[in-house]
Length: 432
Image 1 (cartoon, rainbow, N blue to C red):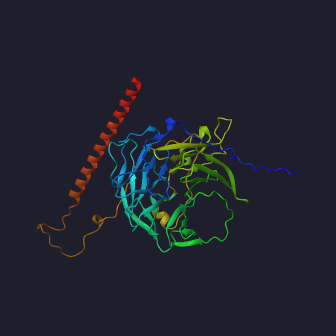
Image 2 (cartoon, rainbow, N blue to C red):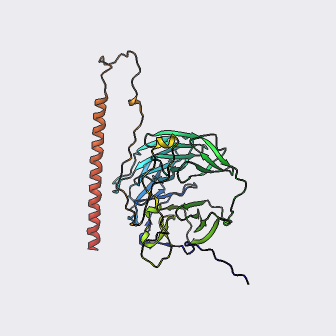
Image 3 (cartoon, rainbow, N blue to C red):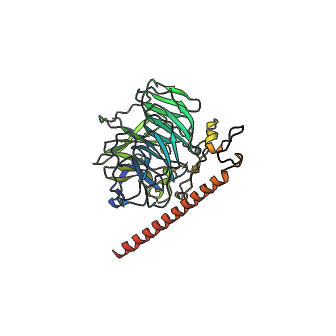
């Protein structure tokens, strides 16, 4: 009688568990817009969720610790004139998030560490280049300030957010709607899926498809008969891919290996409620003391429910085998270095002592604008009769300085009000 050999894997017993009710985010009007994106983005500081909004598009940003019922007047990030379709946190700055919208623009926002008093309405930079709605955005994994956007105009654009400039436009590569885009680990290549049923691997700097029309898959996994969109999340540290179906109520996960059959089913996390979207925490935001290897943020109609994936271990010591060094928040390249042809692997950090998020770093945009250009040569008559060579720059600089100082004053007051409100909450809780 032959005995079935069970494949050895430290991830065979990974199990998922939702958090307690008081650790969920309640009373959030999750967007009902029809789009295949995940509607949720998380990092070690914040959770951001695309929400319903009258007269434009909006998303809400909550500090991770701000669980429970969300105040109906909680400030939103507003600025788009049509629904927001995708959001993505910058991997190199936990206070910077990009949003893509039906209004054909991409906006990049600076989120303060404190909760602002009013809606955030002014993006750091607005990126305009698409002619139809923009449904996909994705930051470069290793180069600072490089952002990808893909729209319903079948166009992929790469931007330098630090200058507001378009770096590359990949136009004649897709004959139909682009469904999804992903970078490889060092950002030298990207992969797209398209309505024309082709997968393309693209070298963006050479602006050419380097692989297409793969003849046969090395592995084929039957899922189910549901027609919902699958949201894939891949953890390169553990080689686990998690598949979350939109409108489905389960998360299936598989281990990927180099030997046949390549894809090994591990388990399924099932619940009763279908998911409207899903956020996936970067590895540096996990609790290593609890052997947590993944954390999802499942969107319901009116709430966000964190789901924790853990590997059961008896020891309280740091588990080296579960936590190899992982990409940290420091970029390995500048945007112009990457554009010139350089590649670099992510700069890794150890999670042995846990990860402490870095204090708010401001995104500075240095725009190449009309004021930087020299006036055209040749005589020009001034209407005021004064010498045209007398520069107006000092006066302009004075106005800009005053605006900056006033903004800093307003921010300081908002922070002070927020601190006082938090103190007031503590007094109120203490008297309950």
